[in-house]
Image 1: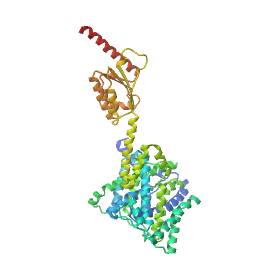
Image 2 (image 1 turned 45 degrees about the horizontal axis):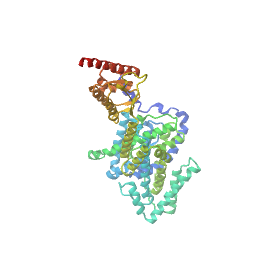
Image 3 (image 1 turned 90 degrees about the horizontal axis):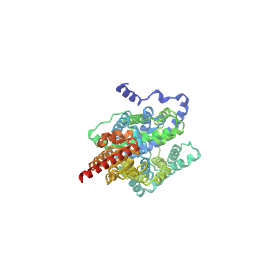
Image 4 (image 1 turned 30 degrees about the vertical axis):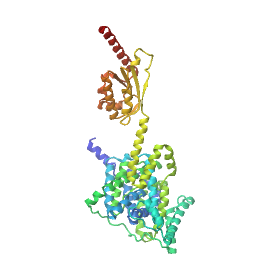
Length: 558
């Protein structure tokens, strides 16, 4: 098979195929039911996330419909449900506040292209490099921000655009008016009560929708002074290409990368969780990125927001019995039907009722059991978790992930360094004359840039020996820095007249050792051994020859 054929086959794997709907004949009924269920659950979230991001309820619905449909067809998971999410709201809200709603389409398209390109370049599996404490930390941070973002709406106040969510929440508490606040809090209380108590009475109870219906009826009948969603168009807008302003695009370069990174990370995490919840097939990480990228591009053309895989809605889909992509497609069509038929009714929903939905959603985003586990695991994991959460809340989500990964990496290298060591050992077998002039060292753990100098300084400091044997069979990691430092040490010992023998270089370390000059630094190619007994015998023969040479020199000198 030629390289071109291989590349073509790889690209074809990223596109939809007949296997996507394998088993549909047996599962279409349960898929339809699951799709309707998810659509009902997704409706209030789509409205709430659109408003919370500053893009409007219509934008949230468009995202759930258009992006949800495109991602269902082109994505890499059979059961993933995509749309607007709380994490994306956290990143998107300050971008729209700083650059205006007109930047939304450009952000969607540019970020979508980056995500799709990451899939084509096979970068899907890199999400596995994100440590668990970082994931839990930014999840807690996101949930905290979403909760704080709803406080102004719950108190019938308006937060300044672009202000930190925690600061805005504290300001809203101090600036609330009595009449409007009482009405808004009543809406929130109704929704929260229904969402908390409803599932306890009936596990499949569509609590968020029922809560919103009850709150809306109460507001309309009682004539409460509450702000509502307002008029919505009775259909999808026509797709429009955004005007590309190069100056604005340069300003948005950083935000676009942040949106793309979040879309990729959250989508792949959601797909991974979904694959562990069902036997309806795994997921293709690269294809998932391509699908999510195309979903964001399509969403941007229709006036929507960047989309990601939604863990909560995907979990509802799986628990409802979904087996194929028909469920996620149905979810998008249900939402489209709501827009076409019930736009006027949806427009009457109080904003405070949607705030109540997100208050409960934010609380449920966090697995408190996982929080306790990560805090108890180790001090290092607890530090990474807390630091990631704090940076997420106070600075920025993407910075939080980058900082969290960096700190976790430093702490991991520190632990790896502590687990590495150089130990001097006794020579095996009966003691022979001259053994005191042979030093046997066992290297274990990792010999890399973080440990090489410290570990090998101990070997180089050895005095009164003629031969040093280095046992490397228990060395698990050897990088270029470690091999190069080892080559320098061998050369330095050789200058002092000390012969270095190396035993047990593992096969996967030989290439690095050779390229870094470690093998070439040995006095003779035969000073590389596979067996310890052979290395010790060679060292003893070397000591005997040196002793014999000294005995010959002494009479001649006299």
